[in-house]
Image 1 (tube, rainbow, N blue to C red):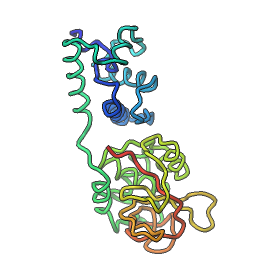
Image 2: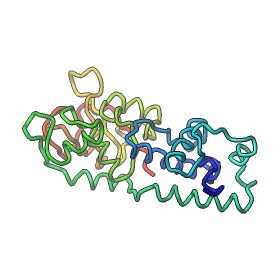
Image 3: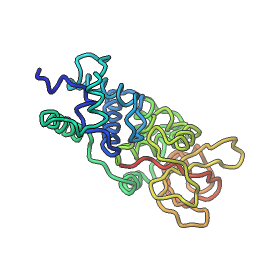
Image 4: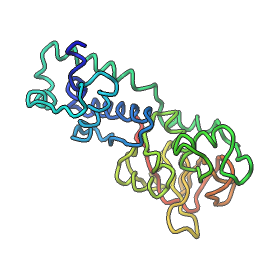
Length: 270
């Protein structure tokens, strides 16, 4: 193995700038997801200890980083991370090779409209048998993607699965199926979310959270298609019914919502 594949991924990737750091973090999360791990690095475009440690572990898994997971960077290597302009030509070439590797890890991705288009493919699908929280195709697929099994309330699994498949969004799978955790992640700008916004400021591709009458906390989530104003949002959601306020219905439906809207969680689209 030559020297170029023994250096830490964190050093030989052109970091130190927000966009590149975000790409690295996204690539790390994609690799963790592919290995079935629920751990995530916050895609905050900040290169800190969390990204450094996890990046080296992923590099080790890929066979392109250090030959030991717990290798520490020398002072010289840390200086290169802080100031990549100090690299010589050989180091820059190695960085370019690592950059290509990261680009290869990032599958083609879309934005909010791609997610909406993907979700609308499933409009009208229903559970079978009725009331089982199970069903062929998307209904079981989204639940299995999230937790490895089906039969639970799946509104969060549906929107999370669509955003992941169509746009590469990286959520905590445990959190995306629990609506209060979606709100907490959005407000904390973590686990794949860019923020929490009012209904008035909702945009296509946001996740609309509902707290319907009689509930103690947010109990349903849908994907925003459009914001017609007046406190209303056009949405498509799973595990609901056509009309009314049903957070455990039997199908996937598109409709204009107003009752119970609590706000929107905005995924971090690339």
